[in-house]
Amino acid sequence: MSSPDDRPARVEDIHELATALPDVEVGGTGDRPGFSVGGKAFVFFREPRKDAFDPETGERYPDVIAFHVESEGDKLALVQDESTPFFTTPHWNGYNAVLLLARNIGRLSRAELAEIIQDAWLARAPKRKAAAWRAARTT
Image (cartoon, rainbow, N blue to C red; front, top):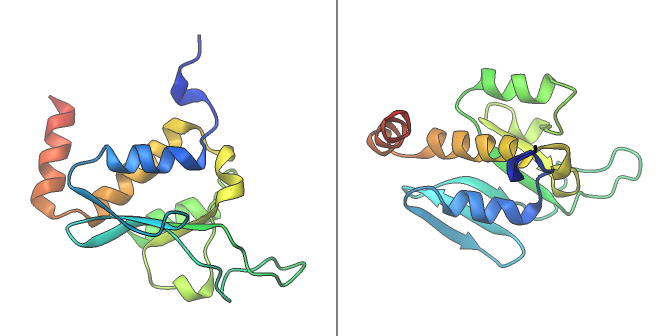
């Protein structure tokens, strides 16, 4: 029997999953929200920018979502794994974040999306807050 977390992820899941974490502030606009903790964004929807475009048409992607990651190693693991929908652009070199096109979010399960969002929150949360959250989940 499958659980709701096995289903394909949806863009709407981002708000639900991000705001379920402690002390999350929601900013941005209705169609391009951003989620932060301790004043640091951990997930946000980007405006179309010249660094993220369709290589076939040259059109800027209108649906890019950025997720922070803990390290360059985590970033590389996600973008180099062809089974994931994550990517990066030269603009993000040296920045611990991965990008995802909203149209491809269904390539992730809801559980996988939850893990990515939790990891993004942990990467940006104050150290004590992150440690307390981890401790609460192991007890």
